[in-house]
Amino acid sequence: MIAACRGGSSTTKERTDGQQSKPAADAMADGGKPGSLKFVSVLEGAWQCGLEADKTMVCKGPPPRNCGNRVHDDGAGNCVANYVLVSTSGWHVCGVLADNTVRCWGADRRGDTRHSSKDHGQADPPEGSFIAVSSAETHVCGVQTDGAVVCWGATDETAAKPPAGTFTSVSTAQWHTCAVRLDDTVACWGARPGVSNWGPTKPPAGSFDSVATGEQHSCGVTTDNTVACWGNNRYGQSKAPAGWFTSVSAGRYHTCGVRTDGTITCWGQNRFGEATPASGIFTSVAAGDGHTCGVQLNGSVACWGRNDHGQATPPPGIFSSLSAGGWSTCGVRRDGDAACWGTDGNNFPMPTAEARAAESRALARRQEFIRRLPPELRAALEH
Image (cartoon, rainbow, N blue to C red; front, side):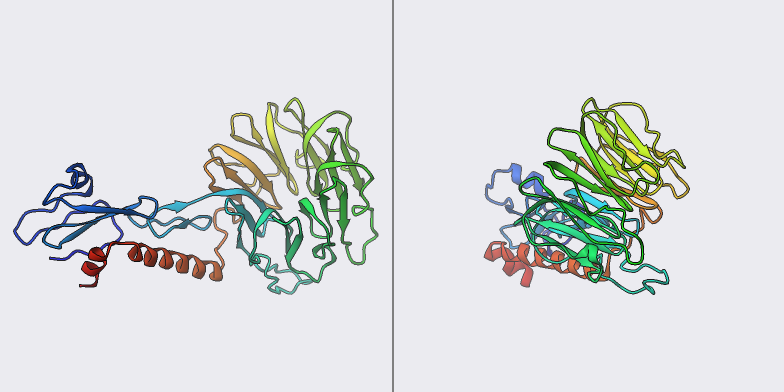
């Protein structure tokens, strides 16, 4: 009797002499002595197959898993989750994986009258290697490994038309984008059609470590750890406090930063309590439209402000980074998994093209698995 390799839990099979073939672990313990199985380990050891002296074959491997939208089965039953960072606009999410590729999921459409539900393709990233990505409602911008900024989605909008140059980070809002150049200066571009420009694209001179864009303002952490802001200051969102900071995040009409002592300070609109931070020591902060979330020293997430869509109710877990959008929040856990909460946070649909690509990758891995088997095992499969 011939058994074919297939997904499933640890398996055994009935031999033609009525005895049962040994499970893989037991066969390996036999040290390869006559009558035991010969094993080959492939796909990072996830699968093991053995051929007995009578040419019967048994395989052991993990069962196929439903990995959800943000991770995928690698073809060997493993859910691969290796995100470095994610960025959400509230409509879609894009993330950079450990292999520097970008993966996006969620809506390619926005159902308002200006865009007329046009598909902008903001959840369809280009090929290439990236070190950073930032999502706005109808477009996304990312920094490639060569330092160039590329944008996709509604590229007819000026915020999605980056200049040439070498950059280390980027932050995009719906109407403007800012990025830090290799020489630590900040460049900004974009404008909101038909609305007076409050100067969010006119950064001050100086050297910056990071930059963050809000609705109509921008803020950055300078190389001496102070915060500088520019643009609309109607709610005080551009009036940065004195002191030293390690990071800053610009929301719609408020801004929050992590001080060098780990506490968070916020300024600007506080309509929903979004500018009244939780106490404690934090490593990062993410400001959304009317809510804010931060990663605490122990890796847990604390949120405050508007919570009518669950955007300020984080799941348990240990996180390394966050991104806050309109009515949702996303983060990367320390194990590389991506999690989202709020409106559609756990139900961003994987784009059809991405689903097909995932299936193709899984098929390619299964074909590679068969190709790497010894000839006698491949022959057994063919019969």
